Amino acid sequence: MSSQRVQFAAFSRLLHWLMAAMVLTMLCIGVAMVASLADYHVLVSIHRPLGIAILILVVVRFVNRQLTSLPPFPATMSRAERLAATASEITMYGLMFVLPLVGWGMLSAARYPIVLFGSLHLPFILPHDVMLYAVLRKAHTVLAYLFFLTFLAHFGAILFHTLIVRDGILKRMVPWNTRPQEAASPGVDPIGSRSLQARTNQADPGRLLSMREQRPGR
Image (cartoon, rainbow, N blue to C red; front, side):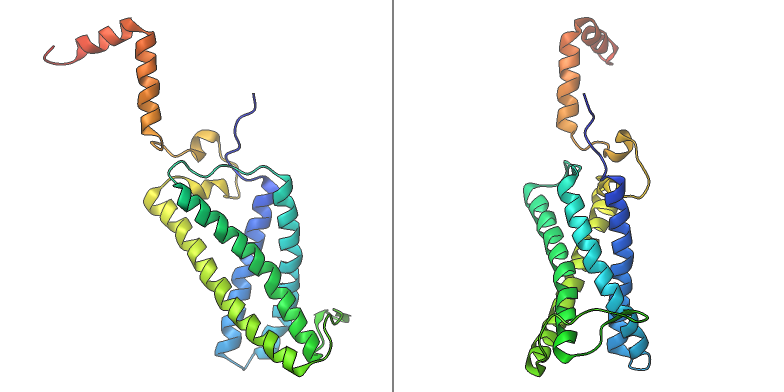
């Protein structure tokens, strides 16, 4: 009988942390582009290929997610919390896919060259249209802020479950392998533990009698 998975697969964890590093870099670049114009062209030259790399990886990650089994949520999470976690994951997947496409379309509509590396350029995917460029530029900004808020909510929820609830949710995605007893949070199901102990005592009357004799005042 195979044991229940307690972690995401190794390749899934690799993709997660690789994309997390790329997304954090992208967010920092976005803030720097808004705050300072001194290094704008340098930042844009990093921003564009990084966005395309995220677009490719999110497709790979989505396909990989469909092909691998997922570890269960901790027992401490209510049904509403699980639905919220699933909804936030879907939202982040969607934004990581849509944002680069909108940026690609925006640059295409303005006929800005989309340089990936050296002489490697991306083709234009939309016709030259100044009004369309303005609309997509605004949409790109709004979606970027939405993604930033979703990322903060995701990060805050992980911190809450790791530092306050301490249900081991982060261990599902840590880069290193964990054993089942390490991934399971102690005391998550006290009712089940008491039930198991009661069944054990019922199956062993001698042990139950011994426990009663050891109680003080009896």
